[in-house]
Length: 181
Image 1 (tube, one colour):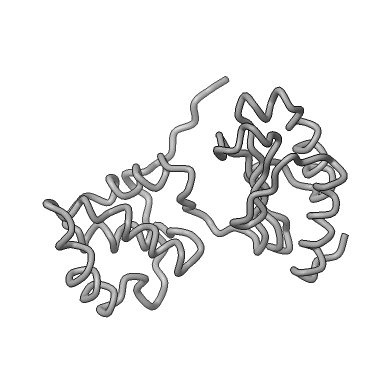
Image 2 (cartoon, one colour):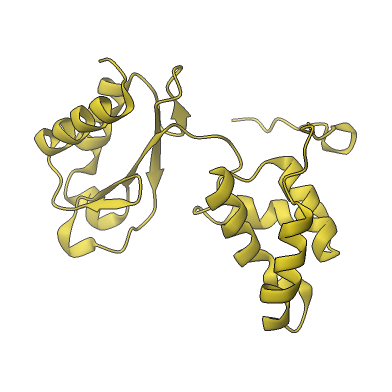
């Protein structure tokens, strides 16, 4: 295994024509979120949740703009986004499938479910289908060990999953997204 470095110090952040953090965001955050915290940095997580909910992911541009609003370094925002699994720094498909790989799910053969999802979708974990319809994720504990194996389809938890149940869920998701299989 080798480490590959990125030229982070000389990289530029792609910037859209319009800002992600608008004046309306700043005004509302200043009025509603910042007063709840002793330091502006305390508001970082709720603001990131809002940005992701609104845009489905947190772009590099959004990270830079949130950092400027809070008066912190963009690397602090990036560190937070990259540390917590709930945050996404890249666009995801219309249907996000997150298969739990905790010890309980591992014991209950999550691998068969993951392998079937890979086969059905034609992508590896943490990839998105070329048509942008599906993203497949592996996730740490989803907090339902007594009903393992489990997976998230969007924000819905599916428990006691089997390969047959997974197939039915994917078929249902294909029909909702208009994808063909």
